[in-house]
Length: 224
Image (cartoon, rainbow, N blue to C red; front, side):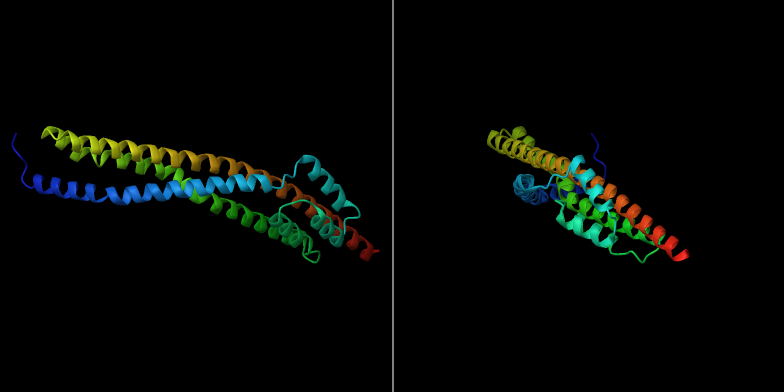
């Protein structure tokens, strides 16, 4: 077979680049695995201390803030509720704007809720990255040492092949394990955050409605 001019040099460059990536890949896999384990521990801790605010509690809080429906009453009831601190802060900020027009207040509420959604998305970014890159690095760690291993097999060096296979299997297992753990963490936390945001949106709409009704009544009294 006739060699293409320059192909040997290019192949050598590719080989050097590929082999030079092995150590960074292994370091990355170890970092991902450590992070996945720490995050999983954090998930367990978060689960034990997580504030569950179901439909019944949401309905009860809506009733409480609707009677008599003043901003002070809303803030008091929100503070007394078992909502997460971040949700309380959003509702209190909305309730503290009785002088704003309904449209301005609605725009503020939308912006505050979007801020909470952004916080949730940022919290999930790292585990999502590990979910995608963990198996990818594992595959790279599998393929990189196989080149020298197969070359060693061709030369009759079984030890080199065995060492390459060990590295390949180890990196694959670690990559899949890190990705799997991160996937579970992301899945559970995403469900929690979606539930919290759904509750927050419902309560925010209720607060807006109560404040709008109060503004309408005040305007009617002044008009008389």
